[in-house]
Length: 202
Image 1 (cartoon, rainbow, N blue to C red):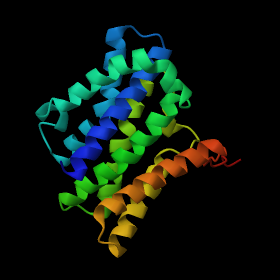
Image 2 (cartoon, one colour):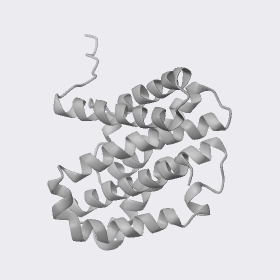
Image 3 (cartoon, helix red, strand yellow):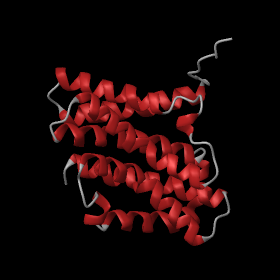
């Protein structure tokens, strides 16, 4: 199993859990919950693949992705109480998801020979679009449109990935470091209430 494929599967699972937990909290029915879990899990990757001209998109070629959503559904219903005790389950799984998908999308784009700038953009798209779709369908303002540091964490993690790749030949280690950077920045931003905002001109 390649590292890219492993990242994609891991990101799909954690985002599916994030979406399903959100839908359960919103008291959606089983079908609605499954739909939210699905779009959260594959939304970012689907948009990325479409923009990159990679069709049919990933989950259409590999039923493992649908299987992961199917696994996440009963897992969340049965183990919701335990997952919530891990700390606000949605935050944990969403944060891990953006870390995984940022670097996975970036690496996939670089492998197609596109520029690092486009690669970072595709990494951010991979990371945030599933969550945007989830929030819109759940009648929430998407995190990317709030003052919270969200997409910025993905951007900084992507820049770290490009930087460490220039000085280290250890690809898997570089990926791990970069994912950790995204997760750490997002965690610290929430923990210490870091915000990026611009005051309107008066």
